[in-house]
Image (cartoon, rainbow, N blue to C red; front, side, top):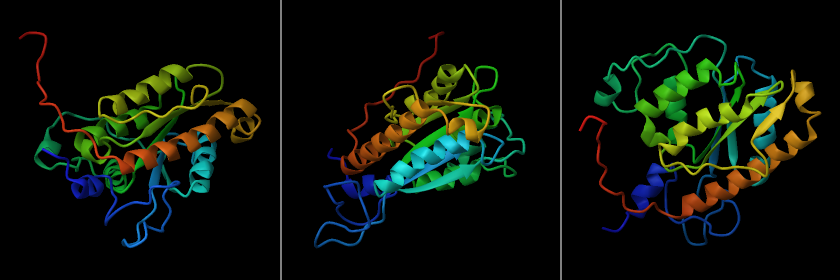
Length: 241
């Protein structure tokens, strides 16, 4: 059965008719069709510091996305605790809604519905992402996987010295289990420093973030134009049977 293009565009957060085929999408649609909203990228800051190293890295990516005509929003998870998933199963009965209402996870799911690309950023804590980001992604992807599925995304890590690759790998696992194209740069998506001022002295890190923004804009445009293939029937098994 042929993929329904309108249903696909609605799922991607794109409403209306055709999309401009040349250049990263702006607000002008193809001649003769209704006006289109811009592509939007949601950048998630998993650091408790609102304008620290991770924010600085995400801002560099956002600048390039904006230059390419992509709307951006940086969602700050904040410094308050984020609850872990308790496997209650409530979101299976109410898709897109997590039972915990006292942190930003449900807000993240809602914002993800209207985004066509993502960047998840985290500082490095003991060689892994921040606990608040992992808890938020675990719950958001479990309760609202449909809001992220098939949309391009990237992981960004900020470290003083080491642990970036393990951090990026942990974040990317949420994307690769959800059919999301993972976007890269010409080096691993990392910056270094102990402060925002340090990050702005990391010349290679800055260039990596800028290229990442350009690559993500291109990926978002491409995936917004091409409907996904028909899904294969999925089989669920475990190691006992």
